[in-house]
Amino acid sequence: MELTDSERAMLAGAEGRVVAEALDYIIQLGEAFDAERLVDIVYCHYPAEMGIYSGQVEELVEYAQRGGKVRVPTTSTTLCADLERPLSTGIPPELAELQGRVERAHRSMGVMETYTCTPQQLGFIPPFGSYIACSESSAIIYYNSVIGARTNRGGLFTRYAGITGKYPLMGYLLDENRKGTHHFKVSVPPERLQTIDAWSALGFHIGGIVGSDVPVIEGIKPNRQEWLVSFGATLATSGSVTLFHIPGVTPEARTVEGAFHGQVPKDSFVVTERDLEVVYNKLTTAGVSAPVDFVDLGCPHSTLEQLRELAGRLRGKRISPGVRFWINTNRMTRKQAEYSGYLKDIEAAGAGGKGSEEKEGSDAGAGEKRFGEVQGAP
Image 1: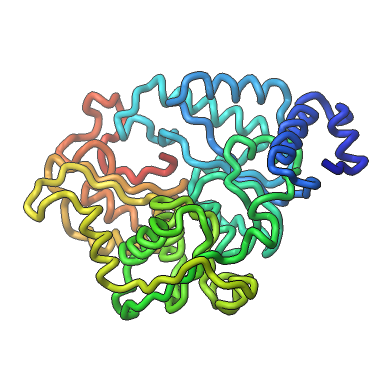
Image 2: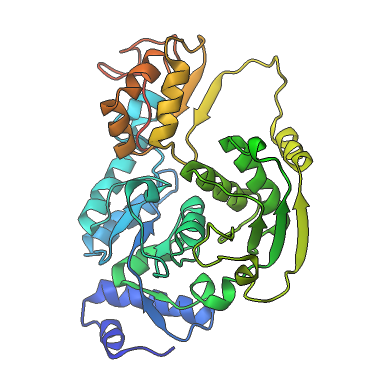
């Protein structure tokens, strides 16, 4: 791999051992995929170490103590606990303590404690065409497809990209790998695509067909952020889609021909309402009269608009006894929802926590709520 003078100096230890080791990992990754050189990245979305994986938190703490510091703006993915209200979901105290150690280590490294799967909702919008290193499948596909930044599925190598500010020029950072592969013509009435679940079903259907390829979708015009987020998330769930093109939406694909870089697609498909119904039937396993004991919303994280809409639906109502109702969002959106008054209606209905019939201060511990909480950092 061709290195610049500054990169060779970094590898030789001019900026310390931790940086040299991190760059060595990045170079090994690039050489494994025949990358010719490294590029500078402008942003990282970092994989938060989960306390549920043995040894991972301890390794992070040690890494931070060794002096690991990120050098580009770096946000973090979700934890397995809401550190502001750990007992509201009944999490074991030792697991919450482990995640608290993660937060302190991230702060030491300069990683921002965002703990969200949707950093774009917090204003982290890298410029079109810029190189970034990103984990979290729903964020990756959104940055690639809607914003036009360039990222691969970063995984744990994202740490080393953040430490060095470098990433190999490979994969979806290259023009030739961003061209469309499959063509989809959506023949569904526009009024049928006015809900998040409809866009989720559409993404799930297409992702199951293309796998890890790049679909080009014609005949749709999503005009709400949450539709695009959910569409991308399900593309990456039923398949492993990292990039999609919607002509007129995706910045680098103004036309169908441009999305395919002038080449012929591998295959073409027409999507109908029947295809969406198949997805609904596949993913709906409970009968109409089956009892509900747990509802979980906000994966990917709920937007402020979604919380506003939910507050309106719950206003004046009460969650049935014995039902847990959790809503997941990031801390900043939760605080704005509280300021805007949406949480008042949501919490009055008993949404969040252990169950609407359980009262404050039960065996969760003195002063800790086990109900009425919108989780801020799950």
